[in-house]
Amino acid sequence: MSLRTLLAAELNPIETNALLCGGIGPRPIAFASTVSPEGLRNLAPFSFFNAFGSNPPMVAFAPNRRGRDGTVKHSYLNAVATEEFVIAAVSHAMVQQMNVASAEYPDGVDEFVKSGFTPLPAQFVKPALVAESPFQMECKLHQMVELGTGPGSGLMLIGEVVAFHAREDCFQEGILHPDRLDLVGRNGGAFYTRASGPSLFQIAKPVGRPIGYDALPEVLRQSRILTGNDLGRLANSAELPAQMSAERRPGDATTSNELEQAIQTALQREDLAEAWRLVALRVVL
Ligand SMILES: Cc1cc2nc3c(=O)[nH]c(=O)nc-3n(C[C@H](O)[C@H](O)[C@H](O)COP(=O)(O)O)c2cc1C
Image (cartoon, rainbow, N blue to C red):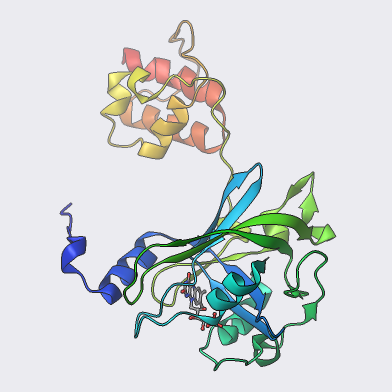
């Protein structure tokens, strides 16, 4: 597989932005609600967004300088002037209205009105909550970090979360469940990702220090059938079975290909014990 290498210094800001947005995705979307010093509401989405600490809870988003002319956005001006913002998560049910709120309306236009979202009073900050959002954070500006001065340069706003609001029905067994939240993420171009339904999957956290890829038998690592994910799942085992006893059972595969396929099938149904039993058979073949 050939690699395309691009030097950052030789790219213009539009090409750079396209690479960042395509290669870093899906990105969570912060629907940022702010008010001007005069109290006028503003609402806009930002996917240069994430959480960066939980004690104290810190989030950051980046209403950057416009790529066209280097001017700054209303969300930035409001948040810096008032030192407050609300960040609302964007669910799939909100995505078309959110898109309307991203349009460049003139100063003083209330995107709650333009996009049809419902403002609700927040408890600790002046900017409004977005009633339709399943998860929201009231934030006080902690720090503004300027990452350049030209068009498209970063203006990162770090906020300390003073209150979380989560829709009651989004909790399942103590966690905010992705199927209930049904959030969307942003990819490159006009692509979005829906983080619910069949695209969700779970992975068991490594317990202690897993054996690692380097501990896997060489024949497995050379396999043309087992994938990186198959090997990664085996490498995530807590320990190598003490003795790999290769006791054949009736119906066990006999060729290396069939055995590797059987290992793969066992891993797909999360039957690690059976996978390792078959690995023992494969090793002695
Ligand atoms: C899903 C989505 C994500 C966006 N992410 C960003 C971002 O991270 N940074 C940014 O500067 N603009 C981003 N934009 C564009 C802003 O939303 C847009 O410039 C908006 O008009 C800014 O509004 P304001 O001037 O009221 O703050 C995004 C747009 C969409 C639709």
